[in-house]
Image 1 (spheres, rainbow, N blue to C red):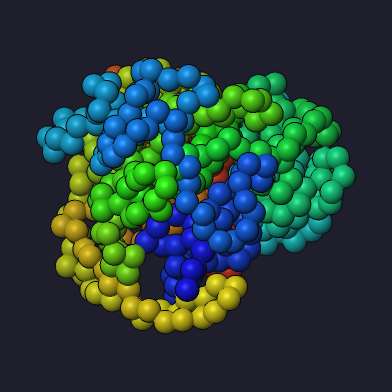
Image 2 (image 1 turned 90 degrees about the horizontal axis):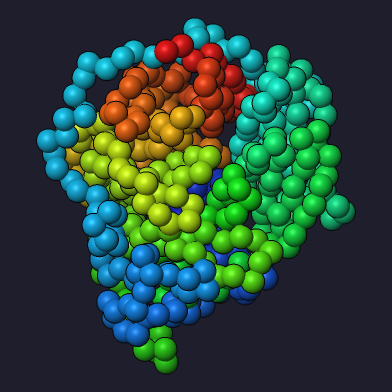
Length: 469
């Protein structure tokens, strides 16, 4: 049976209902669960089709261009097993990282949130569900992208509802589900996007400003679509995973045996005729090679989006690569954590019998888990002002985890104990703090943090805390 692969990583394509978080996201249509979202350039059917060969690729492991030699119309450069081997893009993995040892300056959040929107407040305009993102504007207003109602909700600096924009529909400024992406642009305009609604921009006052169709450039043969995000300049950050071995154009793509298949980060400006401008090639999600045999705490590739740069991190490495949106290397930052050992009581579950389903059928499988000796060094990166980045320590989980359970706002459920963060810039670690239990960090400002909280009844609230350095 040809079962569609609607979410990556590939081992998680056939999602167990018992591992319900990713499946829940798909069912709620908040995160994209399709192979590719290119509504204008790719098939919208559920069946898998082999990707096209990237420009410049002539055979296995060969390439004509690298990230130093690229044009916007070219496909991504090819790496055969790990990161692109430019000297300025190699992330070394020494265990003796001096920047991971404290003590560090202590930062903290206010004891109580200054603003709480949602939660038990079920009044019209305040009830939140499937929050995709939030931002604090320059005048103190707070904007929330509420996926459940397909709206942008605007609130004053104290959390009082001002207006709602968008909503479900097919007219100008209206959206069709799902609401997938949200970012704040220069001047406090807001850009939202989804494969069905296109790219829709709202002005600083919340009024509809413009829209363009959701079309992506061709992705390249034997590369699988892994996701996309909006950048604050209005462009699209695309990610493609080379999980297939490159083959002759007349042959089907065969599955790669690489443990860390490469992921291409590329930038694309919607509404233009240009192709993907490659930013970097990095080692991707850690796989076993068997879709029914999973790492319990896999290493992965995470990133934080700054005002003019990307922070890219392999969670098994001790360095964070900093790249401009145009693909120029800015530098590297230290990972401020050592890999923590996985205790014996976190290695208990060796397998799980699960029931899986798609639109066509239901079937049973047994998933087995491989437990490493150490957790990954870190789990998330969140960019903050002054070219700093917040690095979240990988939590000491007791059960196998999907990476998305720690990195995606709509499905994050593994933060019951809060999270430990260290703040890093070119000088090293400049601060350490913890965020509250159940709090998913969305935005860091000069004097505040904004995030999503879920209570014991799974009610969502957006909370603003003061940041005390």
